[in-house]
Length: 181
Image 1: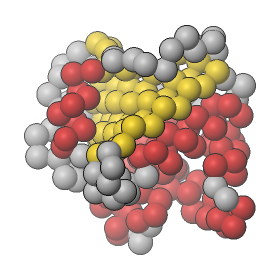
Image 2: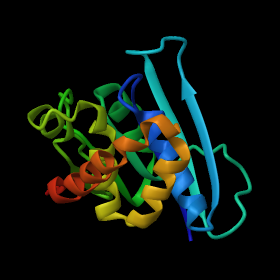
Image 3: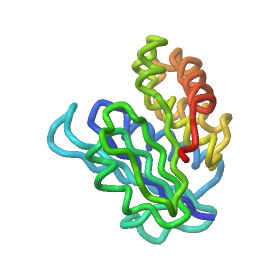
């Protein structure tokens, strides 16, 4: 099975990190993986997205224009990628900063109040992991054990003390995700 995922938002929201952790987690699960980031010249505040492909077969090309899943964290990304989700696919979004919510009826749409939860719990640095937890609840493409292994692989050793907080954020996201009507 192959999962083709686009994660998009503003630079500084942890978009690329979320994709990298997901990719490393897939590697820990012996999957074929592709991670292809794309971002503007700005460091924070510019747009950023990453394509992640997780598969049990060889990945033939990292260049794709339609996706099984879109995880979007701002209005610009929703406007750009909602139409790129294949019929029957998944769209996960954080409603904070979204003025025009998704409207498609041929995909499954889920929301997670990650910004609000991260702010209320003083977990702003784990915002992206709350979103990742929401996605993994609705599409468990990798196990929590492999998320932990992916965090160990992607975070520098000096930041490994943050892994428990990141795993807590993943679990929080799984609790907070809601299917849209």
